[in-house]
Amino acid sequence: MNHNSMLDPATIRQQFPLFSHYPRLAYLDNAATTQKPKSVIDAITNFYEKGNANIHRGVYELAVRATHQYEGVRGKVAALINAPKPETIVYTAGTTAGINLVAQSFLEPNLQAGDEVVISFMEHHANLIPWQMACKEKGAKLRVIPMSKDGVLDMKAYKEMLSPRTRMLALVHVSNTLGTVNPIEEMIALAHRRDIPVLVDGAQSIAHFPIDVQALDVDFFAFSGHKMFGPTGVGILYGKEEHLAAMPPWQFGGDMIRDVAFEETTFAEAPQRFEAGTTPIAGVIGLGAAVGFLQALDNNEIQQHLKKLGRAAREKLARIDGLRIIGNAENSTATVSFVLEGVHPHDVATFLAEDQVAVRAGHHCTQPIMDFFEIAGTTRASFSIYNEMWEVEQLAESLENIRRFFLA
Image (tube, rainbow, N blue to C red; front, top):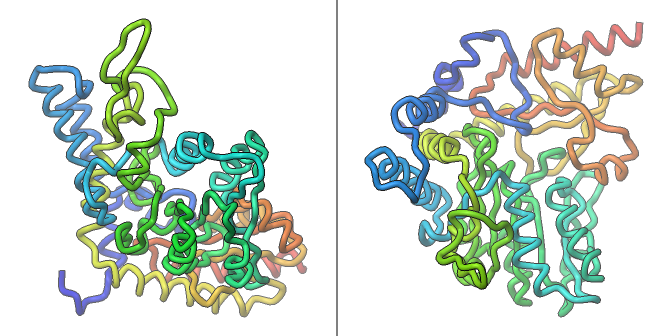
């Protein structure tokens, strides 16, 4: 790729079949799920048409090939996030499953009454409830890093929270509601000074930022395929080798065992011991294609493009009377949450839909954030690589019309 060229969303858009069916659709719900390029759809179709077999068990050609393809994706994912080896990559059902696995298999066995788990105020419910439940179960305390009205974490409070009692830090990389990008490098380093393990929820960052788990020195990093142009129902948990080796399995069944007798079972090594039953084989192969699609793009260009769209959206929306943007972090991604005075977020989304603008409305699985800003919910526009400037215009124009309609 010519690195002087800017990323061209119009060309990228042509790789996504959905947009050929809906050419005027401003799809601004990328924080919920991204569209899928043809390469990903083809990889899944090809598997089912020409390669479908169960993995790890059969010795016939189809089964051997399916196993080879499936296991090969670990290496591709490891390369994407610079994991030290493919064995540190666990296939999961998504970010939520990865976080639950760590909460139940890594944290809970070592958690005692009086211990503490630190999370941030802007966590998605998936990175809040598993820790809350683990703390409840063991009589431990969940501590929450506060944030400012701009949607920025209070680093001073965070530093003071870390104590000899802290057993885990679980942190979102990019807020799905506010678009805030958290300073995870610094926060991980501070936790590690006290030997506190860290899990990062990378669901919103994996498609936008270069991730290097070794440079971050993060203990666990979880993300979903469907937010990085891959299929639903498949995700990744990266874990440091020594952690994965020490963790007991959390679901039991076929393919995660080495040896079974009625008296005793020995489990397979990580990562297989965390992959019970028939996993989403086609999904994993589709995820491999999504990794290939992402790696063909220039990361700096992705970020520049999204910054440009995010800035333009924030500027245009800020000019609309009675519209309030929720979250104004200096370091933020192309996700804009807002409320329109006197109009319910769901009504805003419904009217936008009539103008072919697809957004999300509600609490975005971050109810504490809504309580903090004393609102019921927001309407959220979230951008991706195939979004163009005309979609920002379309969003702003529609909102202006909605405001006039409700004020009339």
